[in-house]
Amino acid sequence: MGGLGSEPNPLRVAVVGSGPAAFYVTEDLFKRLGSGVKVDMYERLPTPFGLVRFGVAPDHQKIKTVTRVFEKAAANPGFRFFGNVDIGSDIDLATLRRHYHQICFATGAQTDRRLGVPGEDLERSHAATEFVAWYNGHPDFRDRSFDLSVERVAVVGVGNVAVDVARILCRTMEELEATDIADYALEALEQSRVREVFVVGRRGPAQAAFTNPEIRELGNMPGADLIIPEDEAVLDPLSESDLAGTEDRDLKKKIDIIQSFAGRAPAGKPRRLTLRFLVSPVELIANEAGQVGGMRLVRNRLRRADDGRLRPVATEETEVLPVELVFRSVGYHGVPVVDLPFDQKAGIIPNQAGRVMNGGTPANGLYVSGWIKRGPSGVIGTNKPDAKETVACMQEDMVAGATLDPPEADAGTIEDLLRTRGIRAVSYADWRKLDELEIERGQSAGRPRVKFTDVEETLAQLDR
Image 1 (cartoon, rainbow, N blue to C red):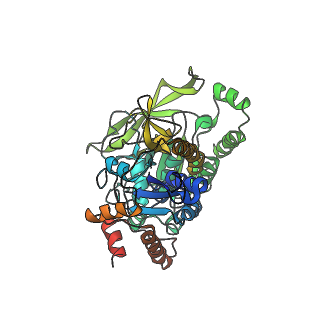
Image 2 (cartoon, helix red, strand yellow; image 1 turned 180 degrees about the vertical axis):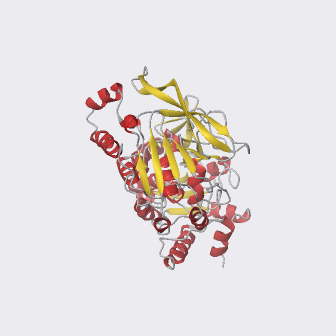
Image 3 (cartoon, rainbow, N blue to C red; image 1 turned 90 degrees about the vertical axis):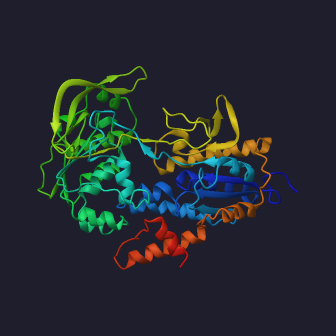
C-alpha cells in the first residue's frame, strides 16, 4: 500500500459546511491530491451551497452561477455529500475523528452583531440576516413574520447585505416575480405598504462597505427614487485627504457615483430610498403598543484612530426618524462549534493559517476555512485564496504525518453508522433530483426556480 495521500491509501477528509468556503477547500484538495483524497461533505440542511442559496439576493441570479464551479468539484468520484446531517447532534466530533484523517470546518458566520442600543429588542426590530434568510427560503426562517404593513423602514448599515434588504423592499412585483424568492415572501411583499426606506451608515461615503455595482443599482431602480442628502455626500477633510493619497480607483469611482446621485431630484416613483451617512442609531423608540415607533439618530464626525483608520465620534446633534420597522445589518458573527475552541469576541475558531489552535498548540487534524476562520469579510471569491491557504496546511501536515489516525477510515463505515442511527442523509444525486424539481416548478411561473423551503417536504419529495 502507498503512503497516505495515494490512490491505494487515500487521505480521508470531512468538510463540515457546504457553502463557498467548503467547496473551494474540496476543489483545492482534488487539485493537489487527485485520486489520493476522498472528501465527505456534511451539511445540516438537505440542500448544499450555503450562503449562495440562502444569502445571495434573489434578484442577483448571475452571482448564483458560481455553483457551476462547485458542481465540478462534486462530480469528482472521490466526493460524497451528506445533507440533512447535523455535526454536533447527529454525529459528534469524536465520531468524525474515528473516521477521518482530517476535518475542516467551513461553517460560516451564522448570527448577526447587535447594535447595543436601548429598544433594540422591541417588536418590529429584526436582524437583517433573518429577513434575508426568510425571503431566500431558509427552512429555519420560513415561519418568521415581518410587519410589512408599515410605511417607513430603516436599515442600519451600509454593507451589501443592508443594500440587498433595502433593494428587495423597493423592488416592483414584476421584478420580484422573475426571481427565485420564496413563494411566501413574494406573497407578503405583494401586500407590502412600505413606501420609504432609510439606509443609515455611521461613517461617511468613503467608508461605505457596499460595492460600486450595488450603489449604481440603487440609483436605477424602476420603482424607487434614490435620495442622498447633498451635505452627507460631501467628504470630510480627513476622508478627502485619504482619497487624494490612494490609488484605489474603485473607491474614487464609488465617491463619484454617490455624489452624482446626491441632490438628484426625485422622479416621482412609488417608493423613496434615502441613503444617509455619518449618523448612528442611539435608541429605538417605542410606540404605545411597545413596537418600534421611531429611531433616534446622532450625527457623527470622523477622527483618526491610533490604527490610522477613521472612526465615528458622536456629536450633540440628534434627530428622530419616524420609522416603524428596523433591520440591523452591522455585521455577521460566528457561532461556536461543539468541542472546538472559540474566540467569542472575534466570532471565529482560533487558528493559524487555517490550523485550529488550542491555546498555543495546533489541534491535530482540525482545520477551518471561510468566515469561521477569518471573520465575515470579503465576497464569495475571497474564500478561494483563503481555502488554498488552509489546504496547503492540510497537505503539509499530511506529508509530515501530523494527521489523525482513524480506526474506521473505510468508506462504507460512515454510511452504516448513519443508517443504524436512522438518519436520512441526502446524497448529491438526491440534490440533483431536488434541483431539477425546483427548476421544473419555476418554469411554469417564468421563474428560475421555486424552492422547497420545508425540510420534511424536501425529504418527502425524495422518497416518493
